[in-house]
Amino acid sequence: MSAIAVTRFGLGARPGELADVAADPAGWLRGQIRPAEGADQPQAAPETAMTRLQAFREYRADVAAARREGDTADRDPVQIAARMLREGTAVDFLARARLAATTPAGFRERWTLFWANHFTVSAVKLITATVVGPFEQEAIRPHVFGRFEDLLVASTAHPAMLLYLDQAQSVGPGSPAGQFLKRRPRPALRGGINENLAREILELHTVGVDGGYSQGDVTEFARALTGWSVGGLREAPAQQGAFLFRANAHEPGARTIMGKTYRPGGLDQTGAVLKDLAVHPATARHVCTKIARHFVADDPPPSLVARLEAAWTASGGHLTRVAEALISAPEAWEPAPRKFKTPYEFLISSWRAIGGQPAAIEHLAPPLRAMGQQAFSPPSPKGWSEEAMTWAAPDAIIKRMGWSEGFSAVVAADLDPNAIAAGALGARLGEPVRKAVARAESRQEALSILLMSPEFQRR
Image (cartoon, rainbow, N blue to C red):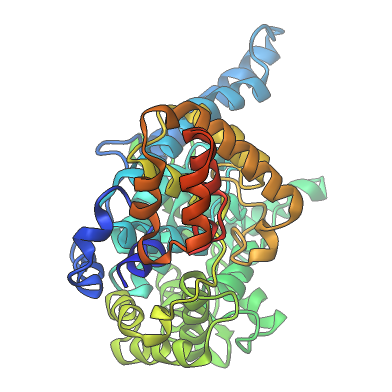
């Protein structure tokens, strides 16, 4: 039971952790739920999304001004963005990985990473690359044990999400700003409604693709969202890089979404829509299915989904109650491991097994990129895949093997692989793997065998 608690619900065992958990595995998990505090923060005083966006926009403005004056030396905007990406995003990602590798509360961190993936903001766009870390710290971590509604609103209103899904430029055609833009001679400069955020909230964040909404609902919701934007350099300093509701860009009028009519009200209108989506029965079903899939199985047991859905509904979407229901569900404690670790989970659990942590971004970024899970860069708003077929292809396994050999060559000299195997897997350590580790010709080979064993690759 302790091995299941630490490896399936958590991020892998650190030396001695299984023994500490053995007396009360479920109680160990429950003790990590902190409804009044949220999740741990990787950095005590990180740069905020506001300061990052201000710096990015100021750099971009300087480049434009220099080019107008004929000065292009050392001002390539791609190079500038790449440098900011390296300096800001690398710091954030390394801090997050170091927390994951060292935390005594692996369930709390895994629960948080699930929600960060559910509300994906990706660094694949330059404008969002520097604010993915602040997005997690500001919009996700404080709310993961609170109400789903609060998490939904915080993630939707965060500048990173508004920029990632192109909401910041969405303008209602009937708004004062829309009427002004219509007078521009070039169609490309006339603006208009962008449906990206509305669609992803419905399809991914709340009711799901089978939740009963139509294309008309997407369009109406997009109209309701007009005006949700991010302060630019022309705003007051306190508004630059922060959420800003532009009333003059909001499409006037009532909106009808999924059968309910919302009266005109600007910011309040959108808030009412989000509140209803948060408590919609389809949202409970969709999100609870994703939780069960993440923690237990690619094809989760319907009975487990039903338990989580019941806890969600009874509590009005309070995530503490849902987490407690997950811990209490017998389906979640089935001995057979049915989840295959993602590359990030594999690396983190390897460091945890030896009691270590990554010392530099170079220990993370290159292997993750090679294994297909580039740091902070899911390929779409769907986030990283939860399914084994994405990560267990033959080429991917070969890359994991290469990393395991290189990792073991660096760290194995002063380690006891037999003790690491027992400490990392406990009762899940099968006799064939135990013998293979014990009979290996070197410590390096023994550790590599352990890391590539089916027991270690699955959770």
